Image (tube, rainbow, N blue to C red; front, side):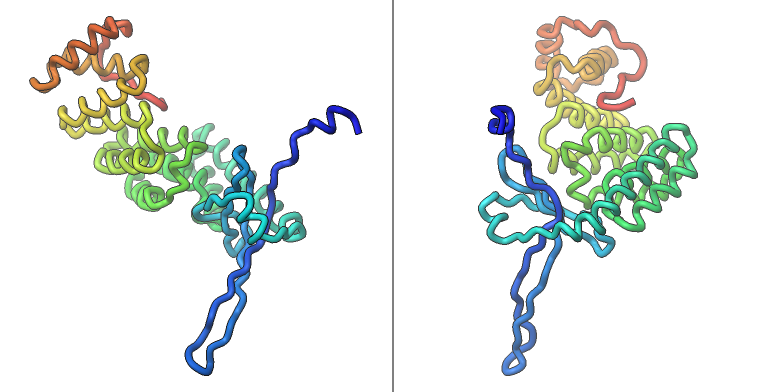
Length: 282
């Protein structure tokens, strides 16, 4: 074996595994034990722990992920390579192709074709994050706010929608909610994102923009200052602060803090005109 092979990093665990749980059924003399088998899609992370996600009846990884340590995983999970190769992998590949087609249609403004493909994906995995976001954005781009509201309700209850890998999608969706006049939903959505995804300068900035639409200057400035505290060089936030100050929208008790911050930044973003830009999206 070559030196390169000897020093090669071990391959990370990925695939379908099963776990078993013994459950009691019935009462008294009719009590009996049953074994419940659950199938999971498992992926090892850089720290050696594993994310495990249950398979839905269509053999698609769906629903909330759990993180378990490697020792627990090796003790409680058994590999199911045939199930992965024969059922799960082909299904995952097919749904990814369906969503990719939908995204191409949406990028080309073929919104009805995009809707059809997103719905095809959701038929086999109603919790698919990319498909839900894509469908919601498609409805918002068509101005169909009632249909977008249904998707919004589903998304705010999906913890997976606010994971780091989907950040560009949930930023875009929140921006489009606000631009379509769904400011109450945008505020609720951004607050949910901050709750699950943690503090993020773009989320805080976009939440400030939503509060501006709701004409609450106090909350607008509060979230804007939080955004700049995380990233004083976030250009849209700097321009927004200059714009808010120029429009005399700064509450009296915040004027000193804003003046000090503007002096510190040196108004490097230059004078802002019109409505401030949107961070993290269009």
